[in-house]
Image (tube, helix red, strand yellow):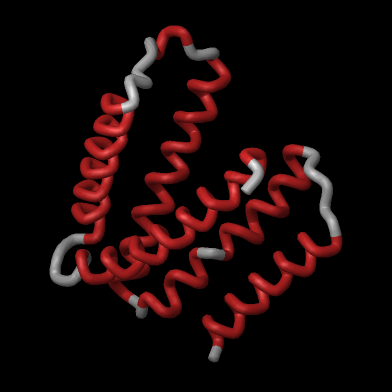
Length: 143
């Protein structure tokens, strides 16, 4: 595989681990507060990421990061936290087979935001694929 296309392997890995996240999350929120479950998950992510940074010797001084990176990473962290809180509560209340696909509407929303806010081009395959994701989520939610 061409190194420029390695994004695809990471994207597939993300999808695989997101599926495991849904499964393990559903099992993990059984009988406990969903906000506490999110907090525990966050601590684990912090420790795993710190371990990877340490093993790869990738720690750098945060003061060297541009201000815009800080702003957008903080906003991303807030959005991630709110997403996880909603996701774990949804898993606690509903079946993983419906919650996880509805959560993936984020893909279609990201396509629209990428086009509107980042100036990314919208191709027919991208529009059709995004539309199919929305259609699939509607079918799953309604039927």
